[in-house]
Image 1 (cartoon, rainbow, N blue to C red):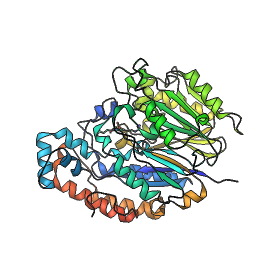
Image 2 (cartoon, rainbow, N blue to C red):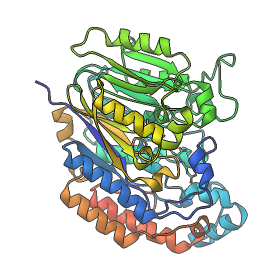
Image 3 (cartoon, rainbow, N blue to C red):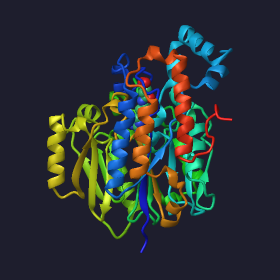
Length: 448
Ligand code: SUG
């Protein structure tokens, strides 16, 4: 009997976590742009969630943050001189550029990559393609370091295959696992890869959002599916409803989540819901378990309530056959429609039997809920043994990382603080120490 599992790799929030209003189309990012952030609290909120999941018996890993402010990008963009001079010049002449190269956005590891488990790939290895995140400049500079950190975490080439990101052009806009769900009966078996896209780049007659950008194209998803060696009959594509993108649903994981044999989604999430259901059921075929389509009616929870509460940006975790727990942000409890819906859900006939609430306000204020903060990797026993063990959460790592945060992180940061040369030094010192704690080797450009 296979004991394959699903591991969650959360992004550790970096020391420069701040609110700069960088993400047009992401309502929380725009609304909170002038606020002070608290990087220390943000990192600790994330660590608390990771530890809780590890304590619940799930395999939980940590992905390191990136070097920020990213001086190499500022040099590429023409700034010269010492690091301190570059920061000062960027703050004076291009403050939004400085904010962009200082963002701690790599914490949202649902956007780090698309991952295909070995049960689905032609060479039976786990495949990773870092997302190019080309739609937002501050995110488009993530994929190289993301690739280096993924390689340092999933090292063994017998089990893990690492690809480069797709070319960085809008036609191939790729936002990674935020728009990808894998369904399966058992994590080790062949599953169904479900790719959701915002638009068809080459077909300008197909529907598209009008106000906010569609970040992810079908052409990108098709390229990833080819690159990972997925069989065509096990892949389903669906287009996001352009109207919900225009309402602020910038990734599909803001309006839908799935795992194993359950798909939990809003009635308005997809352009053609009937087609999505029919194609998923066909790909599911006659597996041992029933496929659950849990559609939340707009009469119970509006799209606006979904965006405000991040109901669907939850982690749907499987504890066994038809026994799931939903990890939601505190905002769900404070939204009466959402809370009433959730109470009905857990007492009803769905496989979702429990709801767990976490305070993730620091990340939520930039549009990142529980599901944004994690990258899922389904692993067989042998693959799990092959992971860099220093990245796996346990009592010791939890304590070490909390001490590390206490030592290096500030508890208040405004956009104007990003020009402080001390912040760069603090950040580099912290990351240098972290690479030793997580046994990553040298993954940052400032390291020799
Ligand atoms: O890409 N916010 C991120 C949030 C990503 C959430 N991820 C998922 N849904 N999977 C984004 O829009 C805001 C940064 C700022 O404004 O300071 C930001 O990048």
